[in-house]
Length: 543
Ligand SMILES: [Ca+2]
Ligand SMILES: [Ca+2]
Ligand SMILES: [Ca+2]
Ligand SMILES: [Ca+2]
Ligand SMILES: [Zn+2]
Image: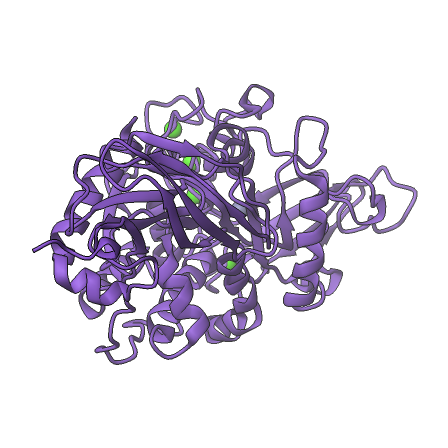
């Protein structure tokens, strides 16, 4: 019996994957209101993963110098295995900025606890792959959290500062046992003023004892490479002095921690990303060697958004040359953001400096402990508060800045693709034209790359123009119907690496694009289809 003509026409339907039913209780931290060391971070990650396995995947992306795992969490609706728009939070390049680890942890909890409860957060997790690296410098985290050294910024590659054959044998020490390692700021008395201003420091040394009895104290501190100066972009202009806080290392990516990040980043495409720091309140956008923002108008618009989102006091126009009063030099030689922009195509890699307390470095906090004929010495105990709040204020800080994390997800360029028609050919080998509506859901970031249509073997069938931020356009990709065209259908993919991909089924036996996709999916076996998609995307990303 001949089928109805209308049932033999090809049709196209979007394969939709529903949100995952919420089956888990709110996840809380095992260690709340206290700093996590690297082992405790690992415990939290395990607990998070086992509590919500449907949304959380974990991947060890490498090891630190001392062999500790550097772990990345991926938060996404795992039932939709097609590559989605990707976004990133990487915390803690710098040891003493341990508050960034805490913010990354709370970001993950917010996502898991908001899923299925908060419509917006649920949409973000259904349409994005959100990657979070809690610490990229776990060795330094342990020194800072467990040894009371609130100064350590760099990684833990050993270095024999004084050439005696021993490594790190005389670090800074809390000599008087008050819980802080003081900095002694020395001012040489060649100023006309009686007491020099606090930032006119000539040099500094730290509290300590002569651990190895060689007559010198603190002559061989631990810590060597500033991981946020070890990336290749403008690395050649970086700091070559091993004893400074910003030593760039012997070569770009010389350090296992930055190598781990490099290898991870090479497998992903991020339109926007955060690297979390503390020590100032600012959202730094990347800049070229002349300190000019790479994307001035875009960044300027975003800086305005951050002014609205973040508490007052954040200098959100850091780096914008045209506003000289507020400008802070933002080009970082060998920095993460510049590499992400120039080498990885990340349009907006923001170095998010999320906490400082400058008041701890005012005069009152740094009393003069010596004032002789040639020198003044101030003792500054406040470094701990400068980079990190007291533990009891960690959650308050999170509440203050959570809007900036929601903003990251809001900006990530997802596109709602809808196919509303298919015309032209009716059998394999004939050409068809589909009517494709594309709605970019990000207010500031478009697809950047052209939107493409791929078949199951990642052969590009057609390429469209890129879609702009906040834009809805209709286009008409065309392609040749496959030999696989039948009532069970075959898959095509639409999207790009920035927006992620949406899969559509091309079938016969339908009555057009009005088919309920859930009915169709149920009829053909979603699992098999999705497995095929995973292979396609995986192969595509490896090229
Ligand atoms: Ca030594
Ligand atoms: Ca002390
Ligand atoms: Ca010594
Ligand atoms: Ca010492
Ligand atoms: Zn930092």
